[in-house]
Image (cartoon, rainbow, N blue to C red):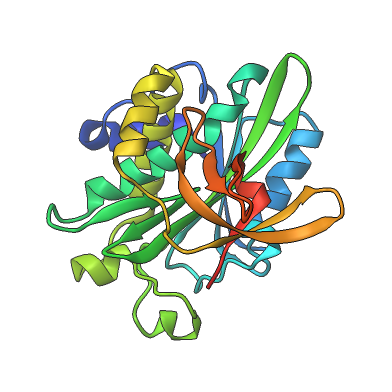
Length: 266
């Protein structure tokens, strides 16, 4: 099923506001019942220079997370989406902050005021200490521009029974709110918030992102940083102005790392 984004705008903008221009003009949404991975479809579209198709699936046979992990979701209950968009090459480093803040703001809207919501570096969203969303980024870049494939998984209507097979503490909007939420509404709000952040001065996004950020206090594993040294444990210290994680090596040396270079213990 293909839905013009303008049709969603007509339906949902009276409640959630307008999608801002410049990034998602003339887009449509391909809503598929079952796929291997929405990321794979968008990656293929990008190779074919098809950049205006957002892909949503009711179920993924091979959903992707960071470091090749699987993203497991029951059929028809959650938002599983990949969103392509083009940006200037020099802005690519801002996308992890911009995208995770968009997911944060979307979830903040649908939750009760007394729920504690945080961004766990680099891009997981936690509700009352439990994971509700994850983000994955694929990028294609040259010296002038970059194309981003933003993958987002949000637990919308997952139940406690659905989460029994997941090892880490997790939750959903339904569990927190004790009621179901319309997945299409969550999708529209996410696109709207992403468009807002892409048009907003980065320093304002960064400030809001950092105000809601938590840095795990446990040691992390740094992979393939030094030649001949496959991995080492480092202590997280904070983030720098680019949103990179600053850590201290066993030798006491500070380093700034991207999300691709580290994996948290436990």
